[in-house]
Length: 140
Image (cartoon, rainbow, N blue to C red):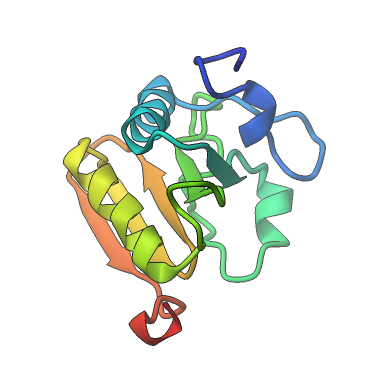
């Protein structure tokens, strides 16, 4: 049981450096819970809120990442993957693509496709989609 939703707790998206930044936008919280409900198996948050210092230490992270606090001190992004389980046995790109499609069907504003995970956020504005160079069908 989570302390924010039925499946997620605030510590799951807290900044990895230990600074305590864990303020995530409510629309993103609602989206990740909707994905979890639709999938029916646990979802792992691999990256959530990031302070600016921690973001600098993550290879390939964008200096204007939606994981960073906005002007109101709120992060908007999560990176997620499915947990290994009865229904989704491998953390393959094929299964990651299923998460990508599901996030799109559930109204995600931004989705990035990576090897073994997706980025989701509910940023204000128009929809955004991208595929990272790490995603490769041959690695499925």
